[in-house]
Length: 147
Image 1 (cartoon, rainbow, N blue to C red):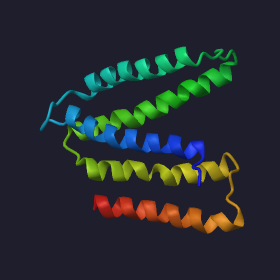
Image 2: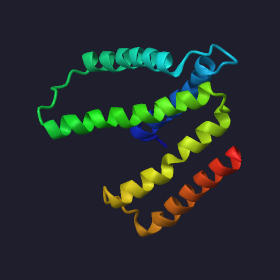
Image 3: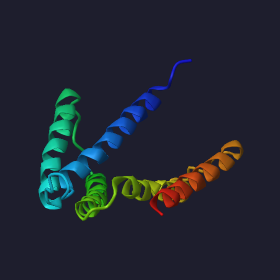
């Protein structure tokens, strides 16, 4: 059975983000290097620029001219950066990575709700039970791990 390409890409994201959280704790937590959230965010910005800049150079794209599209694309970065900054602050103040990531990764609930109501991605009859059950399990797991 051949895996769909999106699943392979998702697995790479899974491993990258899972590893990234541990490195973020090592960099920001006072028990390790204790880098401030501001400095960590700036260094991370450099890393992001290297990866996305390299990808853009390898896969050149025409930049959009529509102000709405530009604004929404920038908003993606702002929303992500706010979440990341607060995670860095929590890590630097001593939050246990196992509990912190369990809590903020329960963002699945928000994603599912917004997908259904804003994007009209209503699961079909066969999948609705799976989506609801999976969402409940993820959130329950976050509370169990963080408690």
